[in-house]
Length: 105
Image 1 (spheres, rainbow, N blue to C red):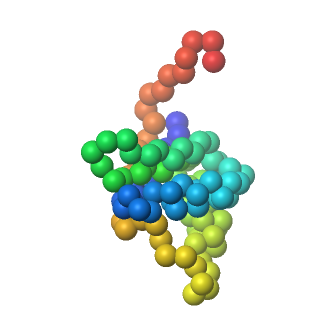
Image 2: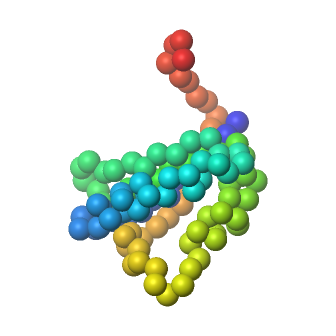
């Protein structure tokens, strides 16, 4: 089954809009990657300043290929890059061992 990578981003309140706009403008940067299955940006609603960036991949090899290819080149650049909106980042990794969908889907 698939693997899930969750990037936990600590985002100060004054940077939330910046982060969300940057993710909105990144459309297509991961969707065409081999082995990519799903993406969600999850906004915290209470008790935390951590956003979750959820991605699901066919396997670890597909994720690593994206990390070393499109993601790496997208995050490299000159000195004119804007300051990160997040003040911290941590990646959690999971294997999907069970899943369910609504009946009829």
